[in-house]
Amino acid sequence: MKTKIFLTMSSLLMSLGMTAQTQTVTVVELHPAPGQFVNTLPVASESVKLPTFDDGIEVTHEEMCQRATESLNNNELVHLGTYGGYVTVKFDHAVQNLRGSDLRITGNAFYAASDPVYGSETIGGSIEPGIVYVGVGDDVETCQWYELAGSEYYTSEIHDFSITYYKPTAETGEHHLSSSLYDDYIRWEATWTENGERRDSTGYHMKNSFHRQTYWPLWEEGETLTFSGGKLPNNAIDQSGNGTYWVQYRYSADSYGYVDAAGNDEDASTFDIDWAVDKDGNHVDLKEINFVKVVCGIFQYCGWLGETSTEVSGVQDLHLVEGYDDNPIIITPREKPSGIESVSTSTPSPANGLWYDLTGRRVSKPTTGLYIRNGKKVYIK
View 1 (cartoon, one colour):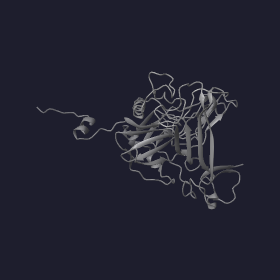
View 2 (view 1 turned 90 degrees about the vertical axis):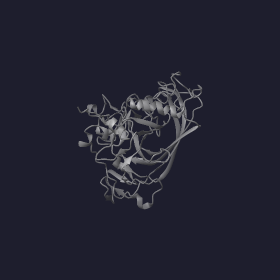
View 3 (view 1 turned 30 degrees about the vertical axis):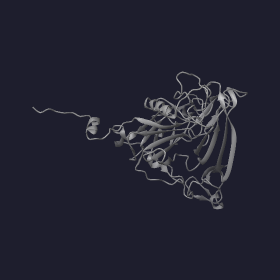
């Protein structure tokens, strides 16, 4: 009598000396910028409910990466803080660049139940867009990084924004702003190029009275945190006019390419490796990627709501979803407008001051409408 042996796909791969591919991710970097849920999503200390930087709490980056790994694999939120904060994950396999979207990255975006202007047709609510970068290589420290160009990449994204945050010296202080516990809590200095001119600004990150723990990551060493890269335009409108009802909007109904900027089950929460571009904005043909990095891409404060901050709750390889490749999600990306040869981060030459319409055609005498100039959207009244 013959004995029948049944092997699961996992055991079959193991018997062949191969490892089964899973949706489990490992967090290899967690570097949030200051934010009102830093040290709580995930928690930095089980013993101190509202930790401050001088509580003597010792927690390492490795420990926080492990806690963030557990959070993402349980569909729990990881908070990135304000602009520049990021998390980097790795699957147990390389993610292939196949037809259609390759990744789904989830957050906690939702639409407003009662938008006073747009009602049930709104595309606004809690929309806190994060930019996605993909890494190619075996080591996160040495791999090559590429941005996945979202819908705003060639028009309104600033590509050389840099900001430094300074560690606070106190957790409470003078406060006059609504819902503030400390108006001048964390100092910041920023610099960027806009319309060919180098600009800079400085200010303070307010401490919100609703969240009293320190907003400074307890595992970060040093007195400053610096982040650089792409920055998206602000998307919040105070629809109340008095600071009580803020709505954060998607950039358009067909915008794409940003984490925490659409419902988790929407196509706009999926990402195509084919969108990868190099530092000059040129398309890069990638066969597979090894790392995924999500960066809070917006620098914005919304009154009592506090900072706009991307949250991540999961990263999924869509090609491991049964049946997905038979009917993949196809998002047609916006093409790089003709006349914009690269994404410049330096002062442009006079020739770069030409005007183009949204199809990329050169316009000699622009009238009222929306145009592209120096790689940015410009509206002429």
